View 1 (spheres, rainbow over the protein chains, first blue to last red):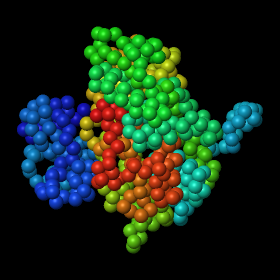
View 2 (view 1 turned 60 degrees about the horizontal axis):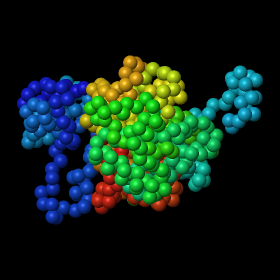
View 3 (view 1 turned 30 degrees about the vertical axis):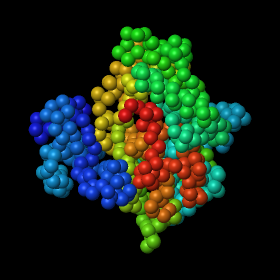
View 4 (view 1 turned 120 degrees about the vertical axis):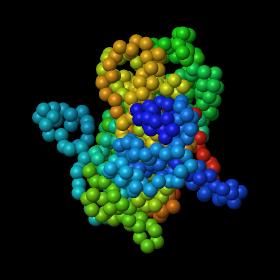
Length: 100
Length: 416
């Protein structure tokens, strides 16, 4: 079980959270002019990396807020969490901060 | 050397010390007509059918680890074809029909055992969904029948059908032709038969890159054993499909999750069939060794770690103890995880790709083992003819763009 540092409540067990998929995927701003391919990309296509993954979690049994998380999908180690709305972090910087 | 009574008797005279190796261990050639990435059941099967049905013998199967060491050797070996949609029924039923004769065809005992797969209903919604499945299956000539709780207990005597459970059993859907097979034997049987026809199975050979020519078509693969040329690549890499496909700049509608299974200490035969419960999330059968084989769920998050959270397995064991009270004191011997590639509609992708010469067989999620022969058979056709077989024509990547999804989320082995 993961220990997840919620940016608002601190470190809590995974059972308090709900996973919400890859982060920083913006809904098309103008749906009526969005092509089928762009809709498919938005809805279904994911980067699914072996390595650092930026993902959303929701602290359903705590503050109930969404936040973003950088996790290594090989070791499941969490390198950084930050509130929703902040820009996508530079992964090279995140790695450096985590001392790797 | 064929397995036969005569050869068995001959080898017995020398105490079975002179059986030949079952497949060759070749070094890669400079070039092949086709390369399959991934030596699991689906990949080895694809090579077997390419050689046998399409005459393509100058082919290789590349494997990062050892053959059959991924999800083929990690699953709970359940076989069934009781899916909801016609496309899925066609694919999985094609597979069940191949299972029925597979041991004879491969001259290798894959221990296919059609002992019956029973799916339990615990809610009114379950009853409606499963009855819909029963009717949909029977319209397609696929066996599936509805059982009362008493009939379910008759079929599987250790089942608890009392009304004081948290989620009492209200009925069950039974596919009698469903069952299990020996997962390792499937990989070994296909490997042996393919190798005998000239297919090179190259283990410990990881693909590092996909090389393409000026027109964008594939021209070969970079591996830990050097460059190997080819015009056709079939990617059958399960949880690592996204990683391999990204080498050709193809994004996939996939996410990889850990899925766990566990086995108990071996006991005398107590369980004559496979029992599955989507709602309280447990499935169990008994292997010929006597171990109870138990499938747990996927973790919540994407991962390549091949381990899962302990709370996932304990959740499944809670359900198992409720369904089968007499196994409560059994100890669990082993627990392991595999990485499964899940599509948004929980149906697989067996398809050509935007890159010429690149084909992909993936997205089997939590239930690919049952489809091994059928998947391999139609995927070989897709690679050899450069067009899909009618059975897999609907299982394209394009369906996520056109919206013609094959939504089997409700029919999959686990509650999503």
